[in-house]
Amino acid sequence: MPTVAVLGGGLAGIAASTALAASGFEVHLYESRNFLGGRATSWPAGGENTEVIDNCQHVLIKCCSNLLDLYSRLGVADKIRFHREFHFIEPGGRTSTLKRGILPAPNHFAGSFLGLKFLTWSDKFAIARAIRAIPRERNRPDLESISMADWLREKRQPQSAIARYWHPILVSAINEDLDRMAAAHGFQVFWLGMIARADSYEMGIPDVPLRELYDEQALTRTGNITIHHRDAITSIETTNNRITAINTATERHEADYYVSSLPSERLRPLLPELPVQWDEFTHSPITGIHLWFDRPITTLAHATLLDRTIQWMFNKSEGRYVQLVVSASRTLTEMPRNEVIDLAVRELADFFPTVREAKLEKAQVIKEIRATFSAKPGLEALRPVAATPFNNLFLAGDWTRSGWPATMEGAVRSGYLAAEAVTAAAGSPQQFLIPDTA
Image 1 (cartoon, rainbow, N blue to C red):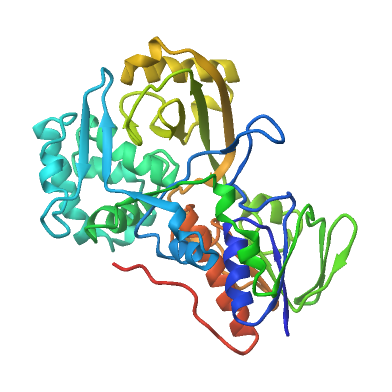
Image 2: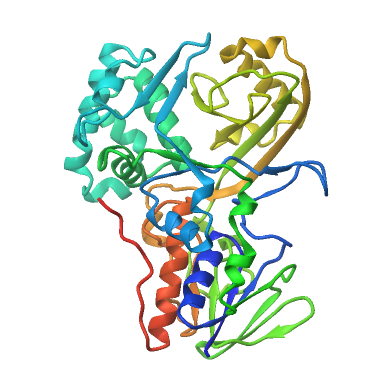
C-alpha cells in the first residue's frame, strides 16, 4: 500500500487525506496542534474545560459543492443548517429581508430585492443594471487585473449602493476590501452564489462548534489514516527532484508521496527553493468578537449590519451570546482588546436597543491576522498548482490555485486537486473534485 504524508490538518489536509485513504493509500496526517481544522476551528473560550467557541463564524453557501461533499464523507452534513433569508439592519433597527421568490434564476430575488428598504430606487436600478451585466461579462479577460471597485465604478454604481449592497456581500465572502479585490473573485462569488441557481445563495451555518465537524473517528474509521497531533514539521529533506523525508521535533518520517497543505508562510522556510513568488502573497485579517449578555438582545438568527464597523451578527445562544464578524478588519488589528469590545457594544446598540439595558457578562476578541491571502488583482496567475518540481510533492491549501478564492470551499478543492495529482503520479488517476454547477 503506497504511503502519503499530509502536512497540515486544516480543511485542505483533511480533504486530501479522506480522498486518498478512500482510494487505498496509507495516509499519515501531521498537525502541529492537538486538534484539526486550521483557521476554521474552535477552542475553549477561557482555557480547558470551558465553553468552546469558534475563532470566527464560518459559513458556506449551497454552491460550495466540495465542502458539502467533505462534510458528507465525514458524516456531519446533518450538522449544517441552511437559511433562506438574509436580514439587513440599518442603524435604528429598520430591517429588510432578501429571499428567493417564485421566479426562476436569475430573477429569483426580484420581489424581495425591490422591497429592500435600505436602498433608494436609483440604487436599485443601478444595482440591477450591474447584475444583468455579470453573466455577459464574467469571462472578460481583464477581470484578473482590475479591482472589483474599478468594475463597480465602470458600471456607475452610486456610493450608497456600493456601501450598502456590494460591500456587505462581497467583502464578507472574499475577506478583502473592494479596491483590493480582483474583480474576477467578486464575479465568481456573485455569479455562483447569487445568480446562477435559485438555491445556491442559501447560507449554511454549523449547529455545533467547528471543531466538531472534523470527526476524527470518521477520518480514521477506514483504517488508512493515522493522525499525528502536536507534530509540527521542522524540516524537509530532498534529493534531486524528490522529497526523501520530513522531520518533526523528535522523529524522521518517510513516505512515497507528500502533500503540503501548510500556509505559504509556513512552507516557505521549509522549501524556499520552490518556484513560488512568496512575497506576492500578503494577508487580509478577520476579527471575531464574542459577546455574552445577561438577557436576549435579538431573536434573529443572523443579520448584516449596515453603515458601521461590525458587519455581521450571528445569534449563538438564544440571543444572549452573539458573535460579530469584521472581515478585512485592518482598522482593528492594532486596536486594544477593550477598545474593540467597547466599539462593538456601542455599535450593536445602534441596531438592537436592548443592548443599552443589558449587562455584558464576558467578551472575547479573536484577531486572525493571516486569515486569508489578499485576493488582489494579478495574483491568480501566481497561485501555484498542485504539482511541483519535486515529483512526489504536491501542494494544497486555500492559497494554491484551486479555482476559488480563499474560502473553505477553496481549501477543500485544493485538497481534492492534490489528491488527484497523487493518484495520477501513482499510475491510477482518480477524480475527486466536483465541478461548479454553473
